Length: 134
Image 1 (cartoon, helix red, strand yellow):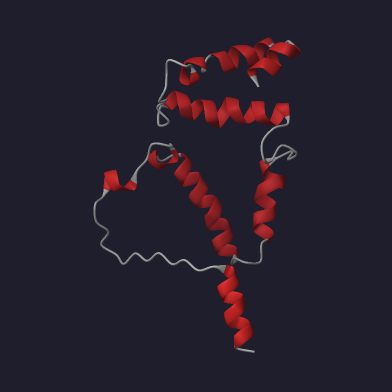
Image 2 (cartoon, helix red, strand yellow):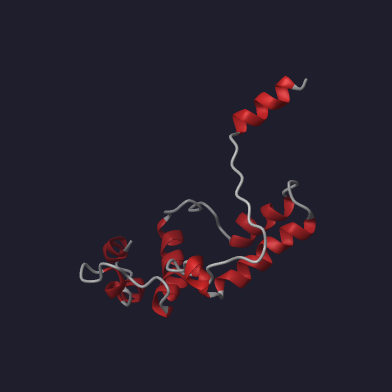
């Protein structure tokens, strides 16, 4: 993206992106994903650059509000309260330590005082069971 801004002559974005060069240089083999500078890069500069350059999974989206927020409020798989809680949780997490790539739950706690279950099933098994019950 930096090269594209240089090619386009966009000195403002070149300057903005170059502020973060040290985060991704060859000398920095393991960038600190939890640093304030890294958070600033991802929250501001990277997202803006990706949208302006038409890259990323949501490159054709004009707005977070019309492209993601409103569609999630229309999902019928969740209750209205659950749909709103998605965004409340997103807001909370973006301000928390766990929003960085370096967070490891095992470093915070070694034991959960609540039951914790992991269930895994393949969709074809569910369909097979439904068909056999008909």
